[in-house]
Length: 126
Image (cartoon, rainbow, N blue to C red; front, side):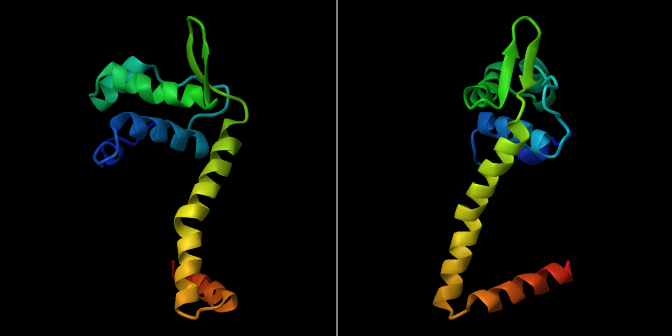
C-alpha cells in the first residue's frame, strides 16, 4: 500500500478513500487473497488520520465481504475478493463512462463502428 497522499486529498470522506486504497491493492495484486491487511493503527499512523476513520474504511470492506476478521490476529482479504471487486468496478465503469460515451456519440450521430475506430485510434496513440 505504497500510495499515499494522492488518495487523501479529494473531496470524498477519508474512510471511503481508505477503503478504495485497500480495494486497489487487492485488484492490482499487492494484497493477495488470504493475506493480512494493515491494521487500523498502521493505516492511521501511515496516513496521519484518526484510527476510528481507518477502522470505518476497513469495516466497510468487512461489511461487503471483501475482508474478514481472524479473531486476535487481524483482517484478511477474502477468497474471491479480487474478482468480485473487479466485476463491481467493471459495472461502475460501464455506468459512469461507457453509457455516457454512447449517449453522447448517439447525439453526435456517431455509430458503433465509428466509435470503435475512435477508441482504437486513441489506443494506438498511447
